[in-house]
Length: 78
Image (cartoon, rainbow, N blue to C red; front, side, top):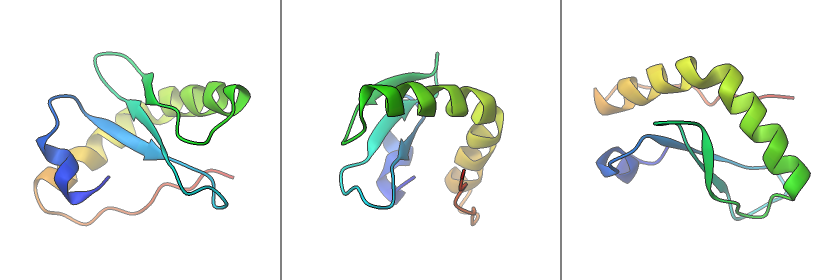
């Protein structure tokens, strides 16, 4: 999440691979879905959607921490 992201109407996260510059943007609400695919392939998009669904509650908790000005750790999935 970036500092300016808290002003969006819908909560979302950015997802990417280490070797990619353009990140994928994923809406967390009302349902998990791709907003912008970035440089991810179709199969990578499917994978990150599934992972995002698994970690959705944790990601929303982190979003609330950002809004409150608290520090959050980057969620890394191998």
